[in-house]
Image (cartoon, rainbow, N blue to C red; front, top):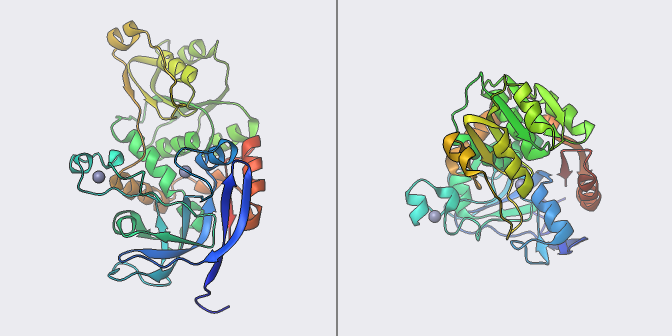
Length: 348
Ligand SMILES: [Zn+2]
Ligand SMILES: [Zn+2]
């Protein structure tokens, strides 16, 4: 194969449920941008949602896949930090740096961060624009496998979510859900020295992985009895920190019941548009519950996430259940929907 073949294979989501493998020209980088040869892309709940039901952010037909790591194949004009052949880890979005939110350090809310995000990691090559290269692309050290490096984006979202939460090693944390995002929370909290992490979820396989990445207890999800169960485990107080990772309104409501007085609830899972929740005002006020609902990430969080992946204090590889070749993405997504798995690596 020549060093620069001109065509690549890429998965295109044509309509919900229909993926086509298409051949198309390998893109060229914009000034300041690069083209990355994808070494590993990971499946994510967002991709699954788009595959099953469509997604407002993914007008079809569309390239998709957004968690990846790889090797620089082409560099655009004025790129100085990277050269062809460099191994890199990257996110798929970056803030503008100049809007109201960016100037206040809330780059996750940047006016254009979502409209400029890049999709297309389920392909042989992906084009990364200058603003991402400048802020959220980093060298991937040799000792970090590509599949773990590709976790940087979702882990950065988790790091951002915990950024303003004070966590102590002697805290009791309850994580609601045991999908990839929930387990990234477990691993991140474990890395911060938290000993008591209770994961509430279904499916034995996921609970086993929860333990492998740092959960001290795993509980079967049982909404009725859960508040009493958590009180039993905390001398009647409730949890210091509750992290909701399912994105369901009734679980948001349940989360608030599980926190201790003065505790914090992180509502991480985004719910369907148009849904509402009800909280007991007495609980929120007299028990002084702090509620946060973090969205996306900042470049600060990306740097921290990368550091955690480089340190490898937990075995991040547990979160990747199996590998699939590029042309079997549909099977990987079908299996992801069935649920006895965490994430799949799509390897071109
Ligand atoms: Zn993702
Ligand atoms: Zn901005």
